[in-house]
Picture 1 (cartoon, rainbow, N blue to C red):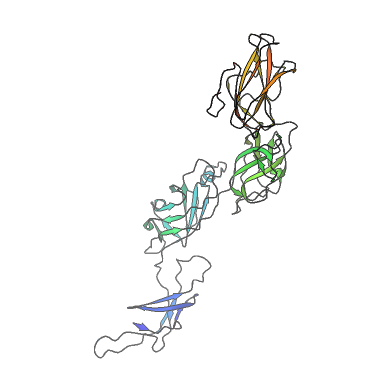
Picture 2 (picture 1 turned 180 degrees about the vertical axis):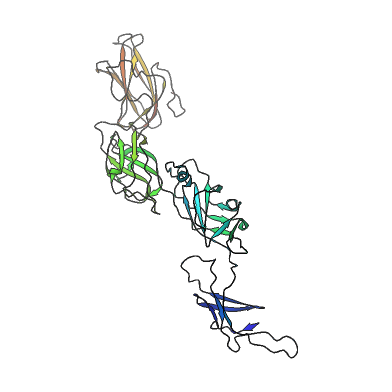
Length: 438
């Protein structure tokens, strides 16, 4: 057949015809995709309004002439277009099925096709996901006729903002509902949407920096904020009242920009407390949501709030506890110096003398002072240089067998106020954590 380039004789119901081409014994009629939604299962009526010269056969053999084709009344074409992936959204189907609280871990992907589908037994195996996610099989959650729900192997930690690609690797396992059916279109879909809600994963106390953020670096030793970390970036809360904190209560929101951290001011204590851990909770609400509008998940109670400076098991030893002589006693081990936070230890004057070696880590100057049980100062020494050990030796004026107290502080001249150190009540060398025993 042959014909002219005019599209006028051809009509596709509901769609403007854009071009016509002739392929041997067929006519390919293209039309604009004007549908508001995917429609590979639609079969719009097709018609041809015959005019002389529009469509004719090609003369074959002697005496044959081109004959014009008759008009064709509207006819419904067969469906030969297979389903294609047109949408995908991540989710948490396992929690919905089990009735357990949401945990912010991606465990499902719901895939939408361009028409109702027939999912064969191997349908889930015929799809792979990006971001190294593993498809464990089909989900038992209810789905629409054009959807396929996949169970995804959970990771060890909440991750809410993954939007994995969806690739149909075996089109024969997914078909449309036509008779005969047609396999799905293979290929990669890149438009997956995040459907997992953000959740609180960590919290740490700190001090407000000059830049207005809550950092773990020391300012004056008084904890006045905490940083709540989410499983993905969120729009910041519009009120501090959706958070709880103990022992320092929230007073205002510091953060304003989309981020996976939220900084909250708290009421500071009266004395240095950088080594004080606590607990933080999120009740839900307050405008916390990811960019897709998925609301924050309540923490369901408090989670641990890490101290700004993680001290060791000797805490709390920030004051001379004269009511409990002998505790905490100094042992030859590594301790942690937190800024503006002295450490107190009890020692026994063996043979009427005290001989303590203090070895700070690199860049720290430490001062060690000896005190009577009643708090009277006796003697002190300071590291002769950053990271250099100092010996506190007192050999006279002490009562053999009596309890005395050692106060260890970071010297104000030290550029670094925090770090590990070791203290040995026998005067022998010890290891402060910098792998250089002194």
